[in-house]
Amino acid sequence: MNTTPNSATHAAAAARTKERVGDGNSVTVEQFATMSYDERAELFTVNPDAYRNLAADK
Image (cartoon, rainbow, N blue to C red; front, side):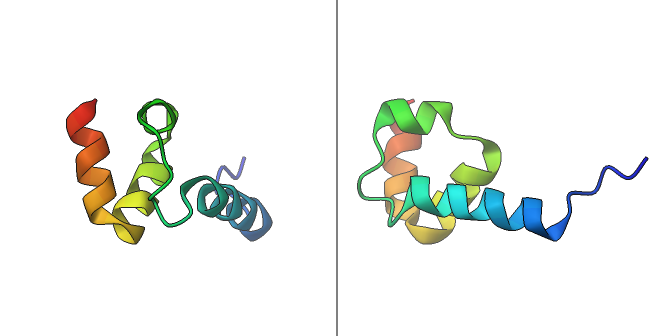
């Protein structure tokens, strides 16, 4: 059984993450708390200051 996600699945997940994270300025503490590791990593990449502020509030 192949457990590697296909490119379409990966692209869809990346699009959902980008939609949810945006520029990082509108993410709430509640949203941050429910984010997956990948979403948090994307937020850190897009807006490290917002990530640090939200992570400190956790």
